[in-house]
Image 1: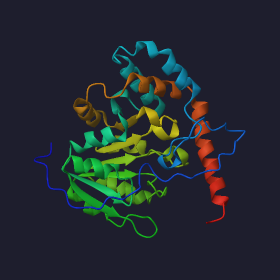
Image 2: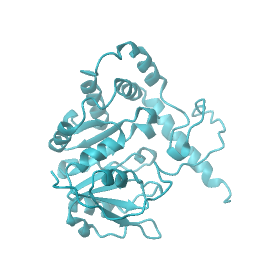
Image 3: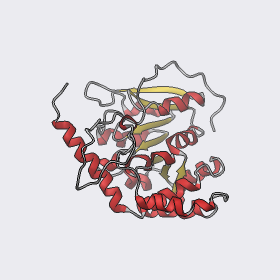
Image 4: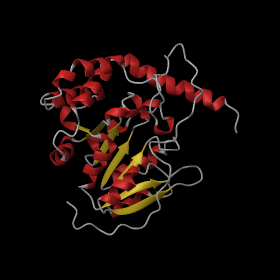
Length: 288
């Protein structure tokens, strides 16, 4: 456990960065993929315009009469379902109230936080709240980190979004591997990895007990309103974090929505293809 809260260094906030910069498509219907859901989606917040799976919605509605009960048993069942989906043991999975709770839990283990600038400002915001020492990882003109992995041996958790948020690029894989090897604790946020053809870092968990991989149903599953997060790591490390988690911080509504989404893999594939197709269309638009 960290000692007394240290005085954070002054680091300017990166204004306007939330979950990454979205592409404002023209809203035209894509017959093969589906029609955007009713209402307005904030693409700069990466709210998926197709909305959630109908199976996710149906499961939430079907269990609405059970909302007077805590999610006893349900949390364990959905955790096991998520673990099966990602090919890991249930003891290696922690469902959280979004990336914010996952970040908070990690910050209970360290005295300092490394974060990429410019980048998703949620890590810095939470580290400030916890009074942790803030350490920047600057990017060069090609959006690659300029900090050598050896510098991270100073200690602390290293928070990396891969793909990076908001630039969307993947850092050199060798650099990322060296960070994982060097850091006191590495937190890889793969919220947007589902929209790429790049493999996850989950395969590294067996050799790296201080690595945590974060998955976000908000993006690839169209479940931003559930505020769900999936944190995956060694069973020992996840066990420590689970013991520090708030009482049932993930609601029954969110759990049923996630379970329903995982029962509809075709919809998950449609969500992914829609983003990829709209990204290609955006790339063909003339520069303004």
